[in-house]
Length: 258
Image (tube, rainbow, N blue to C red; front, side, top):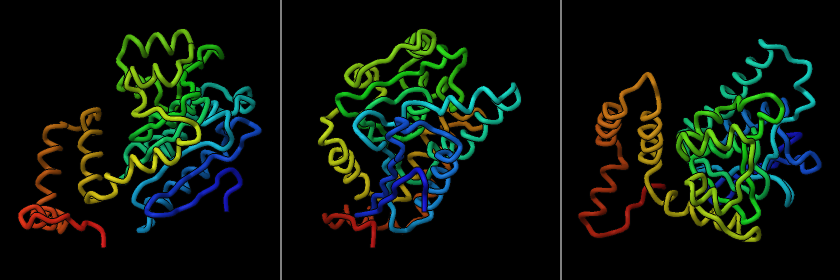
């Protein structure tokens, strides 16, 4: 079905693997288009409760964009490339109604770091490396990196990393708040799936509203507090809320998924 992706769904988790190890899983037009399709399919699939994105091979999650596509672009073409990527993949993931977790198995540079940051959570192998080295090409991040890196680690450190183009290792990334967990390469996917288990045990509508409320904090067209009030109110009209409260009062475990 896909040229550049491997997709597998099991136990409510859809794992999307970017499968270009000979190119360090670099993002090109085909990968962006297929990622968009795979994300749409996962969001529409009732058998999918969460999505994990990772890279094939031991070296890279995604080591950036396919730079060979750049020289043919002018100003408008570059802007269109960035806008298309943001609309088709990065913003779609960030605003998804289901949780997305990046399982970072190696280099997450440029567009790869941006892809990881678009996910709601990040688990990194010990050998993972993160960076936004676009200045080395006379460029800046174009898939949301200037915004999401600043949100995650703060203005000062984000500016340092983007202006120097330096990489950081998994340990520093965790210390800065860029990743949630660090584990061994062998345990990367098991640790990622384990992280998702308590999330998948909760009500999917409530999880979706948590994502939406947190994202509203950063949206220029929304009042985050007002959005929280609205979403909180909506919870009271769901069967999930009735099941959760009833289960609490009856001192039993809530059954949110049939």
